[in-house]
Length: 69
Image 1 (spheres, rainbow, N blue to C red):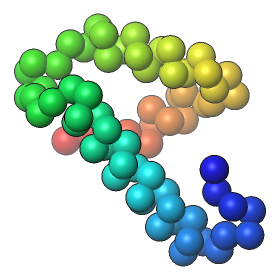
Image 2 (image 1 turned 120 degrees about the vertical axis):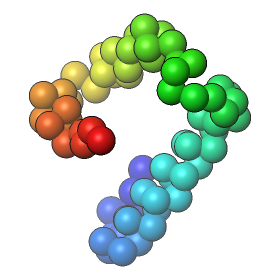
Image 3 (image 1 turned 30 degrees about the horizontal axis):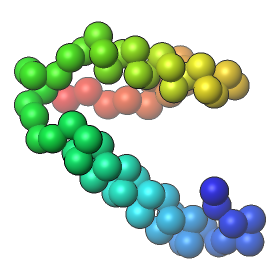
Image 4 (image 1 turned 90 degrees about the vertical axis):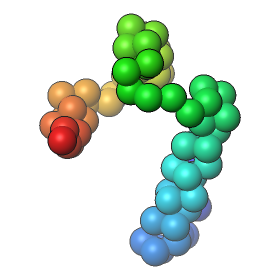
C-alpha cells in the first residue's frame, strides 16, 4: 500500500487521501443517513468479517483508541 521509500509526510498524505476516498465510497454506497437509521447489527457483522481478514489485529488495543463523545 505505502511505498517503502515514502517519508512520513508522504505516507500521511497518502493515508489521508485513502481515508477520504473510503469515506466518499461509503457515502455513495449507503447514502447520507442519521445514526438513528443505522442498522447496528448489520454494521457489526461487516466489522466482524473485516476483522477475520486481519487475524493479527489487536482488537482490544484498537478499541482503546476509539474516542466516544
